Image (cartoon, rainbow, N blue to C red):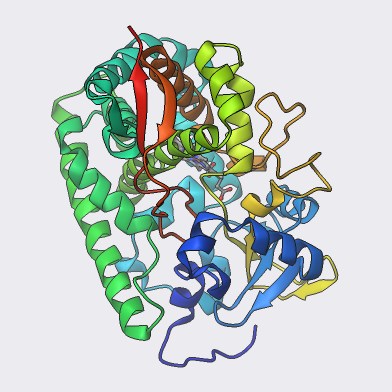
Amino acid sequence: MSAPTEPSEPAATRTAERTPAELSTTEAWLDPFDWYVEMREHSPVRYDESRDCFDVFRYDDVDRILHDPETFSSDPRNAPGLDLPPEEERSPLLETMLSTDAARHDRLRGVVEEWFRPRALAGRRERLESVAAGLLDDAVAGGEMDVIDEFAYPFPVIVIAELLGVPSDERPTFRRWSETLVEAPDGRTPEAMDDHRREQQRVSEELSAYFEEKLDARAVDRRGDLITVIADAEAAGELSRTEALGFCMLLLVAGNITTTNLIGNAVRCLTAHPEALARAERGDARLEPLIEEVLRYRSPVQALARFATEEVEIAGETVAEGDVVVPWIGSANRDPAAFDAPDEFRIDRAPNQHLGFGRGTHYCLGAPLARLETEIALTGLFDRATGIERATDELVPVRSAFIYGVTELPVEFERRA
Ligand code: HEM
């Protein structure tokens, strides 16, 4: 699209890592919803020069983009302006189902799809309940807890580590890796961008080396875990080594940080809506629609990225071939054209056709797992605690261009007998 305004900064940095200037305050990170209203009403598709991309805010437009992967590719190689590093320096994360299209995407997704189906996961329910119980019994002991640190972070990370077959006691390292990969740079200067890019590159190399060793080990020490499935697919010639590495990295990162924020955002929503919380604590509310409403109302993923494969019009704006398009699912999920009273948190909302897990071919592979984990998490919490209240008005947002949540959530409560 237009010429870069800051020549010292490669376009890849501007688009992929930066949040829009409108979201650069703590208040806006915590509640971007007023900004979305303004954009949906006045600039539903806008070109942002500083990030060199088109932001899309209305439900119908976002939905259309996600349903049309031929025009709106997930593969950044379709956006020449992104100025990607040379192939040998690229992260294996670029070689995953998330960043590929069509037949290659389907081949990659097919390798593990069975594992994430609700029926396959049902057999793991008991183990998940026992992990949640162990964490919650410790966390509730003192009548107060940090929901994120003591529960919403460790729970999904233990689960995905066990599925993959890596030791869950390495989770502080997993956390550092995951956070570095989703966090925005610490500032908007070219130096901050450079530091950030270097740090991400370093973490990607560490992750890659970690899984390289695990994949090699599985050749001689086979187990009933996902790394074995991935190693087998590599041995059968279905995956290259880089694809196998990208697979492990994607599952580790996607499998924890998002569900952490779904559980955290659920507790944040409920403590802000005491009547809904009281119903949930009494067991008087169905958790399935409640969880769907959290996915809509405070979506753990707020924005995605697509790359136009041809010139196309979106709501009257012309997007050129190779342009970057950012569909804001967090805004689509609050669009009054798609939802009745979208700014109301209704725990039995129906229908609820939210886009919190995306749509179309890239629809979240882990959605059944994330739903199961969150249901077990909330059930376990309400079994042990009542009268849950936030212990502080201060909230610290996750600083990310696409992930949405808080980094701490201290609460107080009474322990159930
Ligand atoms: C894709 C959200 C949990 C693995 C996606 C997408 C979204 C999403 C919006 C679509 C990306 C796109 O279209 O570009 C979430 C949320 C979660 C969650 C909100 C939790 C609340 C998980 C878990 C896993 C996972 C637990 C795995 C263990 C994936 C994978 C993809 C994906 C592999 C790529 C699918 C594809 O490209 O075909 N997720 N996710 N996610 N998610 Fe999740």
